[in-house]
Image (cartoon, rainbow, N blue to C red; front, top):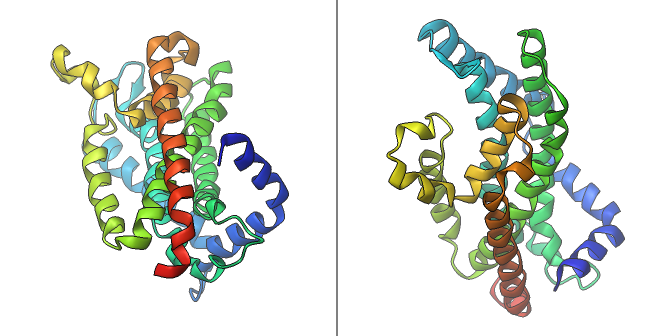
Length: 265
């Protein structure tokens, strides 16, 4: 399974992918009175809580030219998408086990269904952040146009990781719990709530080797720092080398384990 084959499968199965994505998105809020409205209420409530705690409560200082609150939400938005995608996609094959024996549908697309489901909330969250910046008086320029680039980078990264975790989960059901635990470590290893300049210089390079750092920092570069992605130079090259390795390793592992899925589920 190579990248071109995967893209071809996405195009040929786009109708089914969309249907499964919408079904998965709706199932998260099935049975509640407000239904899908909760998908959009939750991000709004979380932003209000952050604003109340850091802007009104702690009266946090500024980070560069913006308040700590605005700096924080620029970094936490991509993290929510990555975290939600990885935690839910790890169980995607198990949860859709009824499709595993259907040869007309490529099972490798199932993790993508969970990722696209998380993407809906992320896009709403992103629009909300842009509105907050606009009504707060912070000017946005053309650097905002590179947000789709960093979002694409995040999707490719989580897709590769999800192929690994979802295929291993079939044989080792504790993988989902391990993913959630590792996400807790990854959250605090990524400068989301804290600034990287508080770390001794000798450790900064190691923290930047974290692919999530590139994405989180990229969102802040687009909204705050006004730095183009090609100005990151070696960091951009390193990120895509790592992502390519993860993507193709995930594709290889998934392809090798796929024939055994039906026997284990």
